[in-house]
Length: 251
Image (cartoon, rainbow, N blue to C red):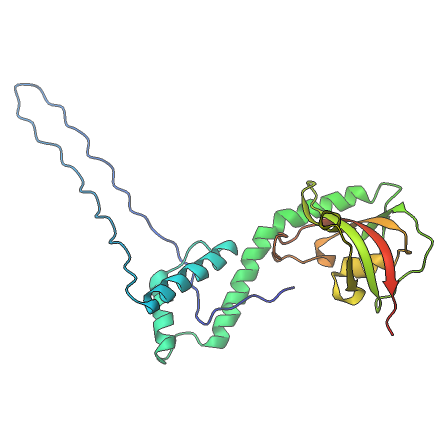
């Protein structure tokens, strides 16, 4: 599991209350009686435009945008910005903070883990249902770890070990068929140490002989885990078609 990037201040999620006012209703009275003019609610004044008068102003605002962008992508949508600003100010000025750095790390890790678990829940459930049905197909083999594979082309060459470097062509897709990586499109295979890739690849490629082409169904626990990784959403089951071209033995 990837470690969560922890800012140096505590982010405290709060509910933001938005007060909405209803327009005043017009009072209708008989013509021979006086009427009371309907009251109207004054519109709130528009916020003053932000003035960036110095490089520090620009850096400060840019840092806020960057921070908000990162955490919003992780699922954080509500913050007490007054406390956020206070924590930054106290820390930079060397004042005592209500929560120290160690406690802040714990709070953030726990909160972000909870958010990510909720965010990836659907992907994990979808993958588990697929694997349960897929394993019933006679051409699919399921290993003890949960990796599933089927042989598309059986080669006759040697098999790699986890210590070797391999050269492969591959195509990676999600369950819905969307592709996320493809060496064929780049026009050249890729070489990598077999010990330096996701567990599903390390295990699966050791089953292959050079000249083989397999299709792997890799559960999230053998892939990129339950946290988002670049373009891969957390908890995703990944499907790879892999062609083993060459093996370079570790000297």
